[in-house]
Amino acid sequence: MSLLASKLQSKGLNFKEEGGLLKGIYQLSGGRSQLFFLDPDADHFMGMGDYDFMSVVGSATDAVKVRQACERVGGMKRGGIVVRQGQIMVKMEVPTEISDDSLMAHVVAVCTLADELEQELFTGDRW
Image (cartoon, rainbow, N blue to C red; front, side):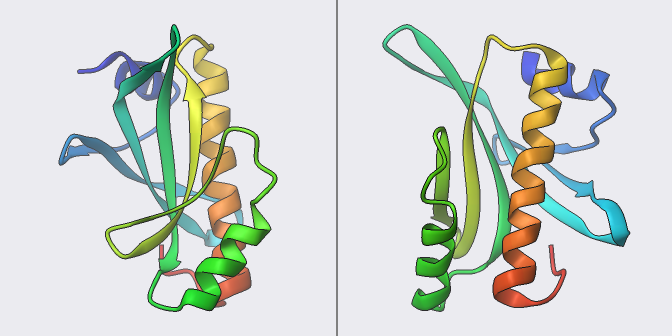
């Protein structure tokens, strides 16, 4: 088990390993939920390590919705919108050298933002 997986499991996050990623459903308030993916293999650039955290917003088949999602999160400092496997996703790069509580706070932030975008752009709760 990766260090990231161990840290997040210690905070009560449930997920499974699938295709090299940690995949799970995060339960939000109001009965809503978000599908998330966490890459346990850190990227290293100029002496710093980052994990990629992603949460699904919805289908990327509509270019207008992709653009709207990009515009909505354009000011994020450590991430933004990516299209992966045909889905719009919120992606955040999270430093490897932060506390377990901060790692979990980033999972919550990514899932919350993705859920807000899903409601705004797709008016449902598919993920």
